[in-house]
Amino acid sequence: MRIDWEVYGLDLDTPLRISRSVMSRRDAVRVVVEHDGRRGHGEVVTSTYYRLDVEAITSLLDRLRPVLADADSPGNALDVLHADNTIPEGVRAAVDAALHDLLGLRGDVPVHTLVGIPQWSDTPTAYTIGITTPDDAAVQAATLAKRGFRVLKVKAGADPERDVAAVTAIGAAAPDARLVLDPNGGWSPDETVRVVERIAAAGVVLDAVEQPIPPGDPDALAWVRERCPAPLVADEDAATVADVRKLAGAVDGVNIKLAKCGGLRPALDIVAAARAGGLDVMLGCLVASSLGIAPAVHLAGHARWVDLDGHLLLAHDPWSGIGGEDGTLRLSRVPGLGVVPR
Image 1 (cartoon, rainbow, N blue to C red):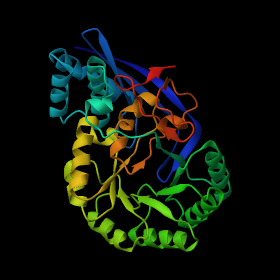
Image 2: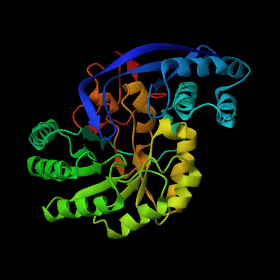
Image 3: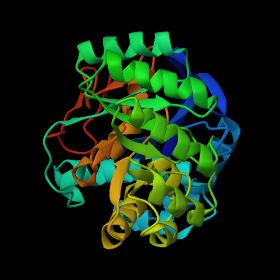
């Protein structure tokens, strides 16, 4: 089994501002795993938050060359890959995706069928509105609603007053859209309750509030949940099965990102832990191409909330096959991940 890779840049159509940073570009590494004449693909993107740059990613992939060369099948390679916790989750997720792509191609089935995901219909995805002025947020929301988006994610956390004004403006501009509020850990517990109560008082119903406070304090999340008039979803606090078990009763749902947990195999374990703890699932992502987003799309049958818009934020997506441009992701019916290069 052979692994190779290619580095390329991904420019955003518009810079995206969140509570802790502004992003206009990121690098991506396409991972190719070849076995028995077939090639499986995956993608990992650079991330300051996850401490991954191109040099680190390619060095880690180079470490995996002899490991994969010794594997006699994609299934065996998955076992070996996930036994090595020294490989960061983003890199593991990309190789995990390529191996699942290979398994799907070999079995002539889509990945969601391969791993036993419940059948799902084409599903709406959220589209992210970054931190901006209330007027600009309203214009974006109205435009997105006309394009067909029924779910909007609103970034927040920098200024609670602006956040309330922006969410209220978005609610007025796109009254039929479901709104997910994401402060990226930018508020205190008290601020969270005050802001969400003010939004509710303005007549705007939130479909969820995602990780409003800094990670590391499940008790504080539970305190917020008791007082918050909207479902509470943990993101940074929910990276592993052990994390999710601790969050049962403290939140309403957990956000699963493959780059955070290590790929499809650990994601399925987290789904099972969430279900056992009475928690709903949100699917999230980083900004990436359709190749990087596709593995998570196959999990949509498990999700209450789907926020897989990373490819939609790009000026040019070098891959296609999962849809989303009209607000709806498409269920793949072709073998493997179901994406192709443009």
